[in-house]
Length: 262
Ligand SMILES: NC(=O)c1ccc[n+]([C@@H]2O[C@H](COP(=O)([O-])OP(=O)(O)OC[C@H]3O[C@@H](n4cnc5c(N)ncnc54)[C@H](OP(=O)(O)O)[C@@H]3O)[C@@H](O)[C@H]2O)c1
Image (cartoon, rainbow, N blue to C red):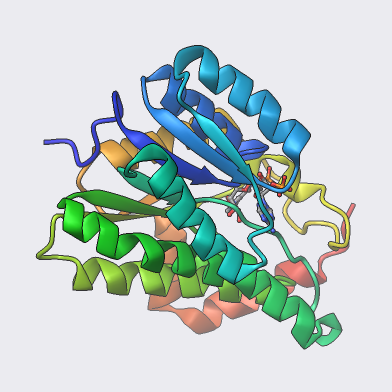
């Protein structure tokens, strides 16, 4: 049995004003789900909402800055009450932070941890009791390959995504014997605005990127399937190599970071 039957479901997607979240919201609405969408940019969110409403008229949007973790918690409850329930929360909103460890300050690390880790945790904790009482529900966390590999120049970002991976794994164990489901999705390089946002060093990676809609399809597959962890594209073997030989991984990563960028 699919863990979430998309048609007729109600799904809250954070970070749906662009990239993966926008593609996912449109895809879910196309498939007959009512979506709640969340982000800071009202104009971009409104464009996504208009597309979603054409297929799923009860869809709604919330303009919010998830760096306000207490506000994120309240928003999750507000969305639950507005729709009457949620079948699924997709914690997709995220900020990049490409900056060398020696150039980071604690405030920046706090901010990245807030948006990428603490807000998903707060929203999840707000919804778990309601989902338990209702007897169904799914949490989907969009982490990163950088949540399984320490990326060069991305200590703050990697830490936030490692935290999200660890949290997801541990809550999946805690919820094992309950009707609730947890999915962890780890994107590799996906073609979105995250690569071009200001206040970030230039990316070290300049290889091919997967279209956002293909990534969104991978998230839908994760929601409909019954396995915990999903890599899109499938780069799991790199994680396995790193786990088997962390020293060689560190050496290769450091070498890549020293390479002149062109
Ligand atoms: N693209 C990749 O290569 C890649 C790789 C690994 C993981 N990921 C992860 O995939 C997720 C989606 O990223 P994307 O690639 O689609 O990038 P994106 O186009 O930049 O989308 C990020 C989304 O998060 C929202 N967001 C950022 N900060 C927020 C805040 N403080 N409050 C509320 N919403 C906020 C943005 O909306 P507003 O700016 O309007 O708030 C936007 O909708 C992220 O968690 C990212 O870490 C992406």
